[in-house]
Amino acid sequence: MNDTNQRLYDYEKWSIYALTAIMALLFSALFLNILDISNPLTDFVSKYYVSPIINESGGDAGYNFTNTVTYAVVLALFVAALSAWLRALEIDASDVSILALLPYVFWAAMGEVVEDANMFDSSLAPLFVSPSIHFQTALWVILAGSIGYHVRNYDSKISELEKNRILEFLCMMAIFSQFLIFGHSISVSDIGSDIDLRPFAIIGLSAILLPIFFRESTSEFSYIQKSVYLVGSGGVIVFFGALVSFASSLPSEDLTFWPLIIVIGVPLMICYIMFNLGIESSNKLSERGFVAGILPQGMSETDYENLVSADKDFMESNRKKAVLAYPVVFLAVSGQVMDGLATWIGIDFFGYDEKHILSARIIEEFGNTFGFTMVKAGLGMIIWWFFSVANFEHRQQHLRLLVGLMILVVGMAPGLRGVGRLVIGQ
Image (cartoon, rainbow, N blue to C red):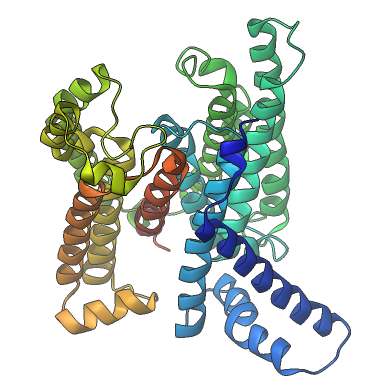
C-alpha cells in the first residue's frame, strides 16, 4: 500500500477525532439508559435524537434545530474521514464510482417510501427514517464494497472470468438477503397481511438474477464498483416490488403519475443538456490526461496558482465547460432541482407540509414554494461554479468524489422520496 495514501491531512485527523468523540457520547448516553441511570446526557439524546426518529417512523416530523445542525456537521465530518479511508484502500476516485453508488440514492429513497406506506413492521421501520436510513445505507454499501474488495484481492491464480463469476454469486446472495430481510418485515406488518404480496415476490426474486442480466453493462467497472452497483440496484428492484404490491392494492384514482414526468423528467433533461454542453471540452482535457479541478500528483493549490504554463492555460480555457459533463457535477445539480420540484408540487398541488427546518424557513421567507424551487435551481448553479473553480490535490480526489456525493444525496434522495409519496398518495 502506498505510504502517501496512508498519510492523513490535518482536517482528516480532526474529523476522525470528532466522530470518535460524538460516537462515545452517543453510546455513553445509550448505555446509561440501559442501566436506567438518570442523567442529563441521556435526556438530551433522547429528546433531540432518539424520540424524533421513533416519532417519525410513526408519521410525525422528526426534525428540530438541534438535530438538523448535528446531522449536517456529522455528515461533513464523515465526508472528510471517509475520504482518508477510501484513499488508503485505493478505491477508484473517478466519476465512475459516483455512477456505481447512484443506485443507493434510489435505494434509500424507495426504502423510505416503503416505510411511509407503513409496510415495515415496528422492528425495521425506525431504520428507514433519518438519520438511521443513512447509516443503514452506508452499511449496505460497505457490505457490497467488501465483496468486490475481497474478490479483487483473491488468489491471483484464479482467472478474471472465475473472479467475476464468484463476485456475481456473492452479489446474488446479498440481494437475496435483502429480499428475505425486508420481505419478512413486510409480510408480518399490518399492511402486509392486507395486500397481495405476489408482485413483490415475483419482482423481488427476479432481482436476484440482476448480476447475470447486467454482466455486459458492468464489464468496464472495477470489482468494487461492480459489486456496489449490483447489490444496490438489486435492492432498488426489491423495494420497487414492494411498492408495486402496495400500489396494486389501491384504487386507480388514488395513484397519481403526472408528478413523475416533471420531477424525474426535468432533471434528466438537465443532465442531458449539461453533458452535451461539456463533453467536447471534457474529451479535450481527457486526451491530455487532465481532469478539471484535479491537480497533478505532488502539486499543491499554491503551486498551481503560481504556475505559468501552456498546460495550465489549456486547462483553464476548458474547465468551466468540461465540468458540465462530469457525473459528480450534473447529478448533483439535477438532484437539487429534483428536490425543489418535488417540494413545490407536493405542497402546492397535494397539500403536503415541509418538515425540514431550513427548507420550511426559506419557503416562509419567499411566501411560496416556487421561490424555494428557484433557490434550489440557484444552488445548482453554485454547485457548478464551485466545481468549475475548485482545485483538489491529487490525494484529495476521494474528497472531491464524496463532496459531490454528499450534495447529490441531500438533493436527489428527498426529491425521489417526495415524488414516490406523491405517486402512491402517502
